[in-house]
Image (cartoon, rainbow, N blue to C red; front, side, top):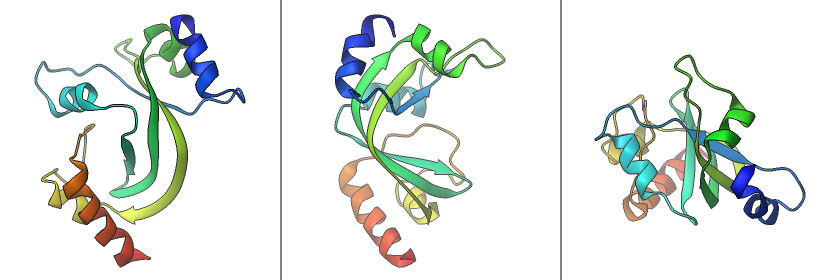
Length: 134
């Protein structure tokens, strides 16, 4: 865990860490770069797969740790690893169609990138989408 060992132990005293990572952006200017630079502790994260939101969580820590990411996830075909790490709390799994929320935020469907969305607009769209499918 390197330099982040104490912080991770404090965040996850039970010894089980909930982490999500991202590889570095390919382009200097991209939606992914904006999202990585703009995320912060306390942000809500929505996880997306197969045109649905499948989980949500809250960021409780942020780490840039290449060695830790390599140990946890290995490396892809280009030898990159998911070094932009988010420590997560309160992970809740569900399935909700994502298209209405993504279109409302101006994000292409299907989504293919890490995207940062404003809370005010997203909350209204998210609440509408959840209520519609409950």
